[in-house]
Length: 390
Image 1: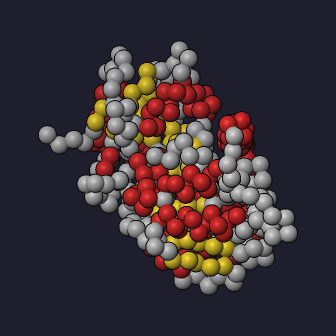
Image 2: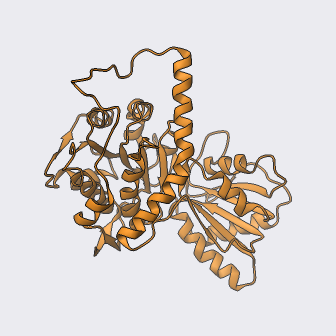
């Protein structure tokens, strides 16, 4: 284990490369690459890594980058890539295919605002548009979280009980291009942590099979049920692999969510990504003033940790959800998931706030405005837009 000053992009590229090299005793590694700001540094790192048994394949588009990963995974290789924003949108068809084929592909996704108008700053809308595509989704809050979650993602995706692709999401520039001191894994540690990749449905010339043929309605129904059941096994498998991670690397990697000062809270704020780091500072300040406020950081968006959210919010009066994303006509996407989780219970008032949409800064003063608005509310309303200049 080494300490190093590294960006989020470097952390993702490093972990992906070591994971690929760790499969050299099996069927090797393949990465399909295509550049797009702000993730390009990830695939540049991977492209120069000296794999013993692997190929990095530059292609003409993001759609083809995922196509390369699909082909590689169907042949039993450990497959991974990275993308962002409109590149992810162009990749959409194959993003869906990867999940429906049950391929354990890992993708680093640097959250950038979808255009037009063109905007390169942080917004989670690019990955959240795939929220129904049967990919496991993690939203990281730091460079260390990116490095560790990327390794965890391979172990989870390749678990024979799961066999689903995983997105490891980080915010553009706030994480991708900002340097901080982190612990980086060694090849020896990753070799021990990751078993050889085994894709049970991989192509075998000795036993020919059709992949992706025509299916009747009942077959499709059964396949969708299989996806649902696999998603249902993710929380338990995640906790198992987190324990293995701690045993190997000597530190914890965060799970589905983190709670902070929720035990006696009357108000709880819920956020994801780097917004949660700002919330902690504000909550510390409010607590010193005697206010009983807490926060939940959602890391695992798919499957959404409904039971944990219900438990943490069971006795609070009000919940404010800060979303760095926007679904036109409906507000923030995390807020809708929280409301769905609490549906049918005489639970708290849940109010949504649109914060940092399009890459705006979420500073302590803005969080103070959210808390002030939430405290005075007697009923929930439409999502409140924060940070709009008038």
